[in-house]
Length: 211
Image (cartoon, rainbow, N blue to C red):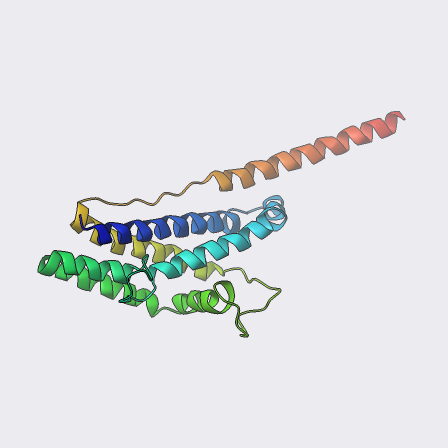
C-alpha cells in the first residue's frame, strides 16, 4: 500500500475513534439520567467538568475529519476529503463511483447547521479564542438533544465514507464501538448513594434515640 495513503488512513482512523469515544461519553452523561438521583450524579463533580473536556475532544476531532483538502503535504492529514482524493489518485476510475458518493455524503454534512456551529466553536472558541458571541469566556453551553442526535448520525456517515475508502484500498472495514460502562456507573452509583443515605439516616436516628 502507498505509504502516504497509509499515513492518511491512520490519522483519519484515529480522529474517528476519538470523536466516537467522546460522543459516546457525552451521550451517556446526557441521555442516561432518568431520575433525580441520576441527574444529581451527572450535575456534580466529576461529570460537570468531564462534559466540557468531552466537548473539546469531540469538536476538535470532528473538525479534523472535515477539514478541507490541501496541497500542503503535512496539513489536514486526518481530512476525509484529502483521503478520498488520494484514494482516487491511486485507484483511478475503479474508485470513481465511491469517490463521488463520498463527496456527496461529506457535502451533506458540511451544509448542515450542526457542522456550521461545530466549526465555528472550533475556530472561535476551542481551537482559537476570538471576540465573538459564541465565545463567552465563562460559559460552555451544552448540546441540545437535537444536536446530539445529529452528531450521532453524522459520525455514522463519516464512518461510511471512511470504510468506502478503506474497503477499496485494503479490503478491510473499521468498526466503532459503544462502551456503556459510564451509563452503568451513573445508574448503579445513584442507587448506592440512595441506599447509603437512607441507611445512614436510619443509623443516626437510632443512635440519637438511644442517647
